[in-house]
Length: 328
Image (cartoon, rainbow, N blue to C red; front, side, top):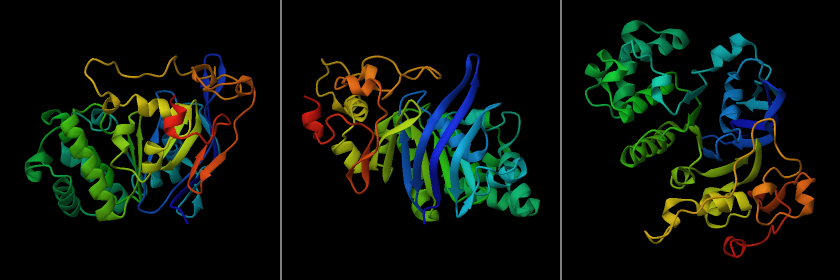
């Protein structure tokens, strides 16, 4: 049994022009000790998917479907049940650690707060755990770090502290929402290596949310590609990156900087812009930007097509083209 099983998740948000679906009929699993990457452009529904797991949707936002975590249905949880779940069983780290670390409070106060609330330990025991956590995420001189404030650290060090905070109550699932976007390339590599090591050492399940497929290439076991609130392709990381079948996935891969062989060539981009929330096209939402689109794409919702037992797409056009053929 998977640690997390999401079935037909739909997230509806209130907008100025009425209700709009930010996530549409999304289904996926995360296994015990697995790292799943969820990728897509801004507005694809990645973050709303994560927030629905924690009961943190925006005001008047609502979710339907099923979210089964560790053998129990959590979508209908009460506010109190969600408070007990957050941090203790499912934890989240954010793109900018300054949104999750209070600039006026010391690191010790912020790390021990979770422990005192969820694990009911003494202040002395909580401080010892906090020191161990800072050492685990490779913060130099953990004792001095506990007495410091977030503003005294670099962006990379703040993100490591945010990870330590998320790990404080030994959650089973860690959600990392764009954990490296605000960091330079060298620091990014260190954070990704840390997440991979934590998975191995703690048997932790991880969901990594990003718009950058390059971040996922060496970190994740599987990748789920989202567009306009829906899945378009999913499968093992190596298979997705080497043999993508959906035109949108192909476009994301072609846009990776490593695909440019000459400094004189420009980066490849996907023509057009993602649709706005509440204004998704009929049929396949990607059809206005797709070079393979036919008339049926404008009206018919694409069904799931299995490429292999673990690799599927939601696209009826050219489904069995190889990556190379599909790019011609």
